[in-house]
Structures are given as structure tokens and as C-alpha cells.
Length: 208
Image (cartoon, rainbow, N blue to C red; front, side, top):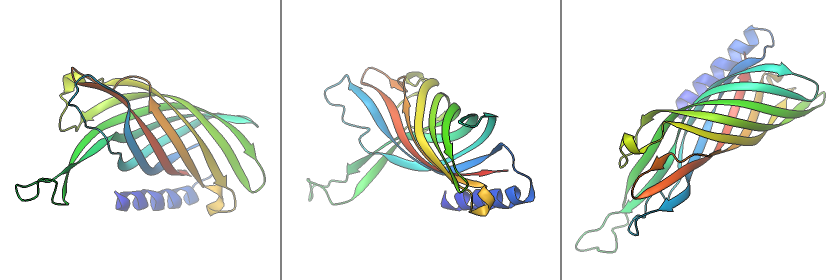
């Protein structure tokens, strides 16, 4: 994951230097996600407690730019979910051996975001906000517990965040973003539990 991150970053740098300024490019980074709005329907259910971290990759196109804001469409691949650390016990160590098994609850999505970005710009930097509804299409269920029939394939959500572009670094081709994402619809809903996911994204972007 880290290797892929740096390959995309370096490629974006050389491509952006070989071309003129444009309004489209790539974003790569990390996404830390966790379960949210957990509604337990069974007293014995006690899972989806830990957060999980994965890479994030997207392409974007800025289709309108004024002096005070811009509008951007972004299509990204993201893997959200949660983890559980299950303690290993034996007859000699009923309270745990100090080792853990990791149970992974991962869901692969294609996320379509359309963002309104109010901005403040000077000669040296551009600082902007991010307000974005999102439509998230499930492309693969990697959860070790939940069957596909209990997973909602189309999920609505939103992103809010901030971005920063220094103009005196790499000819102003790179920018940085931090975004909080939350699903508005239940991703999982069965007889035992229903829940949504929320996540925090850290991205580096490059114009082509």
C-alpha cells in the first residue's frame, strides 16, 4: 500500500511537470474508518469495535472555478469498515495469552463526490473548504461475517474537510486535504445489528 502510494505520487509529479496547468488530476492517501450508529439487536453481539486503515485513490475534475469557490467531481476507490481484536485463550491461559486474532470487516466502494469548495487565495497559497455529498457503490464485500444479502449496495453520505495548496512548492501542482466522511444509510442491516461507517481521509493531490 505504501509502495503504491509513492509510485502514484512520483508519477503525478512528472506528468504534471510535463504538461500545462489543468483542472483535473489524482489524489492518493490513507483512510481510517470505523463503525458508526451501531444498533445492536442481539444482547450478545459485541463486534465492529476497532478502526481500520487502508489506502485511498481517486481522480478528480474541477468543472467550475470562480474567484471565491470551485465545483469538483471526484471518483474514488475506498475500502471502509472495521476490525475486531479477538484474544487468544487456552486452557492454561483462560484470560488470554497476550496474542490476538484480527477479524476484518472490509467493504470496497466506488465513491462519487461532487464538492463545493469555498476558497481563500493569496500569492503564496490557496486554502479551501470541502462540502460534498457522495454516492457510494459497493463493488466487493470482504466482511468475514456478513452475507451480501444483508449489505446495502448503494449508500448515500457526505464529506466535510479542508484543503491547502502551497504555490511555491513543485510549481503549485500539489495540494493536501483532510476530510471527514459519514454514511447516511445503513451499510449493514440484519437480525443482529445495523450500522453505518464513518472515516477520516488524508490525501495528497496532483494536477496533471
